[in-house]
Image (tube, rainbow, N blue to C red; front, side, top):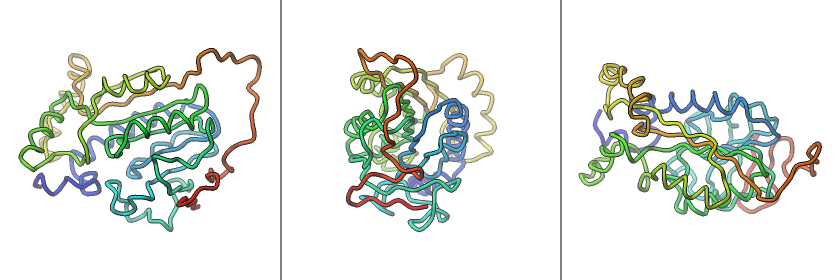
Length: 267
């Protein structure tokens, strides 16, 4: 397979390196989201991953960018068109990801799988995430690590016009993400790196370097090709006394958004 054949997202996720990364990310998400509780959880973009499949909240939804439509980097798989529902029968919400149609402090968990890398304004997207999350709500971010063999391969490939991974903009370094979320009042709860094998194109060669997974996790953990960050929204000066008082949910049981233009909720 040539480099050119895997630079668009749907083809890349079906390629050997794409499957390799998605399997690692799915395993990390399944482990983390199962222990996060609340009422409403959202996954912004990337329907190729089922980020919320192990989460037990009643209001779970996949939120997709209506502005970009089918031409977005996150092109929907054939089984998930505008007339279909998200994995697991969850609702699908179409909207502008930079202007989420949900009330402030109404979401308990927000997952951004590579969403920042494709956003035209990642700072604004993070501000929207901070706005809709409840105090002590959790934010999970997944991305490609620029400080890795894959990051070096991508930089060289972009110069030659043959990028390795499908990203619309530059990779966002793990350290930059940490700074951004800290400025918004988040506390970093945990960071995890993975995928230490070289940027190779076939399953055969990726399997030959399987020994690098435990070695990388032990000796050079910050150089994994992908990372996952879990952060908690803190509200300074707030004290929780007694049982939490619940306001009227901002979203319906099916996680329908509040009234806003260009928004569609499907079941």
